[in-house]
Image (tube, rainbow, N blue to C red):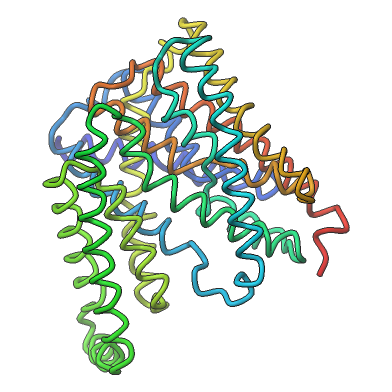
Length: 379
């Protein structure tokens, strides 16, 4: 990979902010970055080679950081959510149970892919990184929102943990042991971070770092993140688990605002867009366009995710909030990435997962607009 190629990647990644600029569309920035990657990669003109080792390594760094930031967005410290935790957990479990039905039908009867576990995780997932900004941007509030947030956070966290097990069931035992090792290491880190915060040492280091422009917190967090990613790779699990779990640990302790700004700049300004352009470049959307079965699978997965979430109307959740909870982002992206890297998904299948996620995002945007007009959006 040359500096010229890197300049092309960064230039095309600007399509993300351009498409997200109209506020009324509520489009995530990554959508434009995926489109840009498809345009310069194997789907389009082919001027970027996603198989390049340097490009792939930088993309994996971006993947770990994107999942870390997603983990920090889970509102684990929000005291308002504790009262709604039980119903949020019940709804997340209900969605997961319902998702098993269409997943088995799609995997074993209609498409014969054998990916029932993967489809279950995909349809049961919700994206905290996407849904929380929509809720904040529209000023949604009230009991329906308080019940939605723990549902989304629980589904997001559990599906990220379950994905490495579901995508490769043949090595589920190895993946489970690896995931347990990463989770144990993250738990130890959480205890250490809590001690550093309680002792005041973290604040003293922060003051010195801010006064002397050392960026110590960012350096230390990157060391920890990359060490966890190395542990994940050695344990044969994805760096997505390392990034997301470390993000949860930081969110549980409390992420300093200065660190949040620094990581936002590094992730959203460079490595995150690079990852999504790389992912778009790996996808063969033309294969999806010429593969009717995969195109139908994309629609089926997207609609299946929406239906199992809006079914929570039976528990009293408004339809609009069920549609909003169906929004997928990190899990389908991670599934497409892992499936491509491990050779478990055909190009058209990986593209189908992304297309299904885009369908759920479209439904979520419409649902959020409906929720903002409904009485349930007021306190």
